[in-house]
Amino acid sequence: MKAGACLLNLSRGMVVDHEALARHLKSGKLAGAAIDVFPKEPDNGGAFSSPLLGLANVILTPHVGGSTEEAQQNIGQFVSAKMIDYFRSGNSLMSVNLPHCHLDYEMGSHRLMHIHHNVPGILRAINDILADRGINIERQVLDTRGNLGYAIYDINQACDDVLLTKLRSVPHTIRVRVPGVVGG
Image (tube, rainbow, N blue to C red; front, top):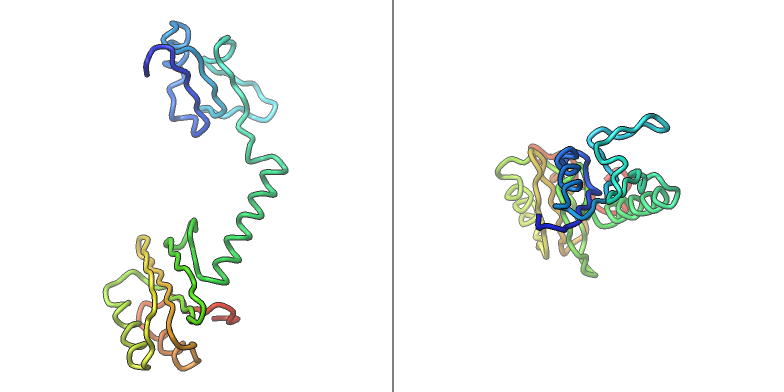
């Protein structure tokens, strides 16, 4: 860092070597620092120790942004909105356990989602089933994460029970779903 710079660490405590930071702050190499995360986080009400403690050019604050009532409410609303979007559209952006798929919906299309093990030939099998039924794929998106694959399709015909049964019988299928179908 250039001389006179200020350092902010609001990410993770282990990102910054606090001993080295204290040396550079004391020497004047750095003009100041603001830290709200620490290599060893302070206990609630317990003793706190840091080489940065007591330095005039340092601001130390607790990392509690996510613990406020407002933050918890915002998180709840955000997660709820993402879940509703997934149930309605199949979109899985920002999911922690599904590959990230997003497909804008076009009126008149019929949405279909397929979760499967990430092995070769799955898309071909799905596409063959759809083609054999005379169903056109208008849009599709696929993403994988490790051994999991997730595809969203917009097709030109509604899914009936026979089609869903055939798609669920594709080897390595985990789940087939259409929006609004309970148990789908």
